[in-house]
Image (cartoon, rainbow, N blue to C red; front, side, top):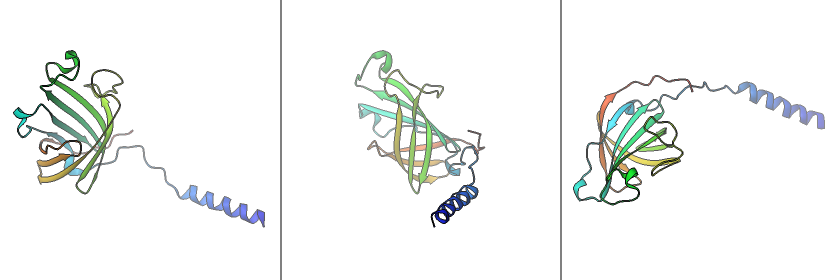
Length: 166
């Protein structure tokens, strides 16, 4: 009886292993309408705000590259970092779009999008959710879950996903 049970388990694992297919080590295609470069032109009432950020997003297949151009009238740290109230931060990561919610998970990077492990402001993991409303093929209305100020992104360059090996 014990031998039959082991034989059954062995047969089950062999069938499970044989039926599994290894996924190819290439990028996923991502979301077609997002592919390309998107830019935020302005923030509503930016002159009255103490701090705000302007986003640039570049979607390549299932990857996203984010540049935030930050402006502040408040000194949060060393002037070498803040550059008189204007500095940029960079993120490289993956995104998922579920209905109207864009989830971005990535890491803070240097301007060349290499991993940043020291320096000014943010280091490590970046995670954010955005609610998207497609106004047209070249205009998205965006609300960041980490901010109360909605903004628009304009498509500045359309691209097509060509999945690259990982």
